[in-house]
Length: 238
Image (cartoon, rainbow, N blue to C red):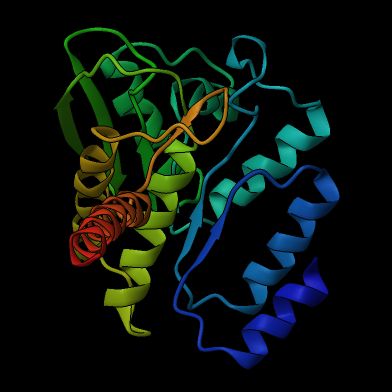
């Protein structure tokens, strides 16, 4: 994994790095080594602890894995845990809004440049995230939606943040204003995609933050309609 990442970084101009489920402590150590080699590149760490399909969504980590993941979170430009993941990283319950706010600040105090604690798995009329940058915690609230089971929302959000930082940082230091702008932009983009999830199998639905699936389906419908019109015209000519 490390050799592959180094090959990409040596060949392509890389403006941001995003990590997700890494699978083992050895993989996390490898990413930590990579981070040390590329300190100027913004790093978005999605500290995935359990797959979407796991029973109850409970974290499935041993002590060593959790410790290395804490080290990785401390090296992030943005770390993006949900409530349960934030609780595991900090070793305490994170349930309420005040818990989430304090957790975001604590993750920054532990080393991260910024921390986004996501409230999508919480309760109440709003889904509330807290973004901590330095000693400031920004509340980002959205009306809570009642959606079908979805796959990959956390990954999509972290990827959007990384993409935005990569597109706007241009090698410069990522300051508080840029971090807040990237997170808010990514959250807005995700909210739009949540309104049109796609069923690509028989299980969880997926979201399409780029609009590609929606565009393809619309184009396919237009192509079928055009083909039908052409066929009818040919029949009239006969």
